[in-house]
Image (cartoon, rainbow over all chains, first blue to last red; front, top):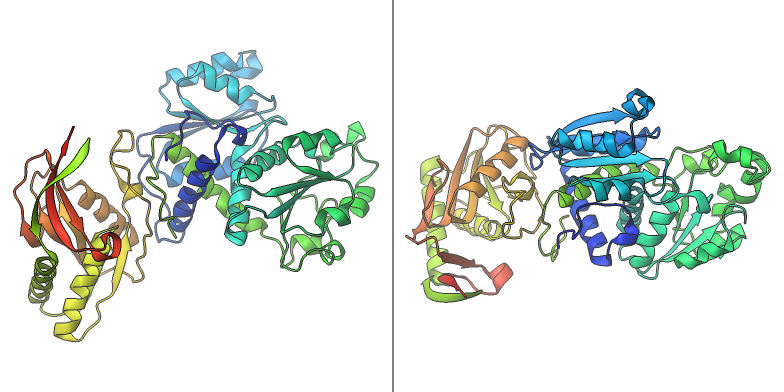
Length: 315
Length: 182
């Protein structure tokens, strides 16, 4: 099936079938990376603008690589050097860019809802590359793709997400996507970061780390936003590490094949110890590779690409 | 809109005979199996390539390297609503550089699939030559592409549809002509 929408704003808006369709298409693109030529010509002549109003290294490079590997023409736009500094509104900036005949806009913005707003005022497709604390759908998809490669069908699988859940767009996209695929999601962190009300998203809230990891098939460890430390959501980095940091000792209390993910950038020895970050249980770099494949799939499918009846997922 | 079959133009025996003849023609043109590589276009080109490889092995006692290519990401019609392709595996388990690649597909029609397939192969290496083997050539080319080895020439109208059925996917081997009717 094709995606029924013009834009990708969040995984909340997608059906289970659409998510699976993106993941299967992403696997086909993943296999392209092992070829002598790692790009395909399918998006030749299409123009994509990367509009980043917030700093980003990994996501921006990943989108750029995805677009280049699809042979699209790309333009990068960073807020620091833009007319926004001169007081132009987001709508005017975006409409000016669209008037230059672009097919797709990838946007990161600090305001929740910025991508949805843009999608309503533009004819071009909009991909949300993170809007405030709302959603980061391609990160959610690449996390789910990595889990699916390891665990197969995610129905009934237990995923524990750790960290600053209430301010995390990554957590939200993970929760929406994972619950749609039937996974059981547990959220863990201090109550200031994981309020009980988060359970309304369809996840279990657990403030005791040992209990949260005991039966997990995978731990998805989110970055602690140290820049928010001024709001005193936890007393110190060291205390957070002692209470909620994932260390080899914590992993001894998990199932033996439980593996560890992190969307990066990591704060070593805060949310994750260096021994775990470099250890045999983590799949962090697989996530990064899958990120490019998932973004290729989303861009391709929103551009009218059709994965057909997904009877036989590409190897 | 339903597909209505009109005639069976090849039965299983005729399909196998045609591909056996194609195998002989390939051997004759290539003067043996040296440097030969068979690449089937997903999906029905793949079992047809297997058929040719089987015939070559019976005659020469040599197993020719085989692979499969999917052309979805090399199509030229992303923006138009075309028939829905599956994304199948591309598996080129050999270096194609300096090889004679025999590209195998079921039906040759506009030539656009072949153009895309040539693009795929070129991204895997630089073959000495690419030859085209098809079970059915139905005419109506839109590109300057011609087959080197043909199982059967079937003059058709644009309205007609050629369906190739192979054992692996359809449980039977045959070629039928039909039409889409309202």
